[in-house]
Image (cartoon, rainbow, N blue to C red; front, side):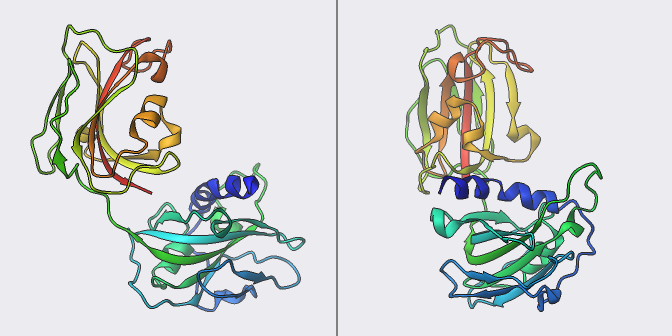
Length: 308
């Protein structure tokens, strides 16, 4: 189980690496003659049989079951159960399956994934099954010094499509506040205003206040979040970062950010707006960052727009 989890955690990296190649990878409903056979019911871990001989050197896809639900289009975030194999012509070992971990994956159908998947996903509907063979023709631009990866075989069962992220927090204002910090909610899709100019001393503990309580599912520690945020230093009102000003929400695994965010956002419903005071030991500690002196208390106002 641990090995499967580790492999599945790396799946997006596999997909992103394959996206670097040419657009000329062969595709088609016939699977471009890969010879790979998939059996079993959609909704359960598939059985995959590989042909004898050398693994395929051309990427391809095949619609195993078209599905009967809604279609998938470019830009969608598709929720899938997936099983992945190394097609090396020897053991052709399974590398992991979300049917084993019981945690479907979410994949954005965009230019960050290989061309063969960009096309293949749009040919299957919810409830369908897609076979994808990702060979090294999809990573033709890798440096020659890097060893070629085995051909990967993916079986995707389409669970559904994730709703698009919110544009801003939506829900009921709670009336909560953080002493020494002011947050103004302008309403609609506009950015909140955060003011941290204060003579009050910051807490040496993490303080999280929910300004607007959303109605979505609660954030889990293992999820990837889409958020808008503004970050300032306690006491000085100096801003060091803002996704609002960049005009683009940020997206990241919650497990990959500072501990104050990990502890402060886990369990908060999607759609919420929170303000957090993060002490140095849960922020950047003794290490100065760009625009952030060492041992700073950080203040963030965060809108949780989506979680997957």
